[in-house]
Image (cartoon, rainbow, N blue to C red; front, top):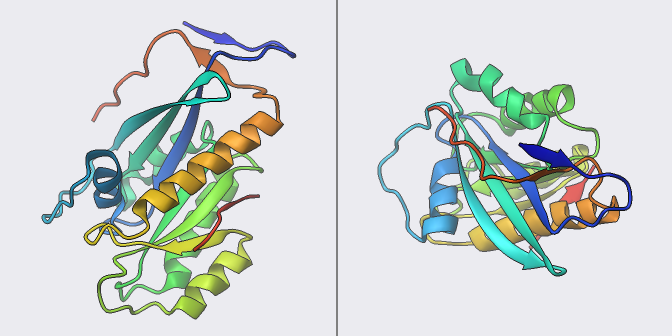
Length: 206
């Protein structure tokens, strides 16, 4: 059972949800494993459906759980992933810097999904991955699309452990700050843990 805050309540426990999106092979799962488990996965195993990990922190005297959702990049799962946008507080949009697929295709597709399914004020960060490889997407293009959609960007490498921690800390700080500014309105306060599913830049809030 979930209880919902009434105006003026200060929740002792909160859950904030961050959803990772990007096409298959963009490096979402490698990023997640590097941050939460501290290792790099050499072989590519595509995510089937949805998975998540949780980080629990004490902030301002309350327990704060950050659920980080890893969504499948394959097109057949996009309709499933869209369901999770609605309750998200933040989005990490992944772009493979070594991909021959244009940044226009990569970013525009996911921004369309966000605008269609997510809240208007959702926090977002554009994450360029695989910065250790020869880069086919220029810094200028990355910065240009971040500016176009009013968000910041950061270049990362899960293999070399570059800026992974920084990217996660930034989006977590942003979603917490925004929720705090809104007095944690419309948050559900869980009484039980979440159900397991089947299967140098600042980010900004829109």
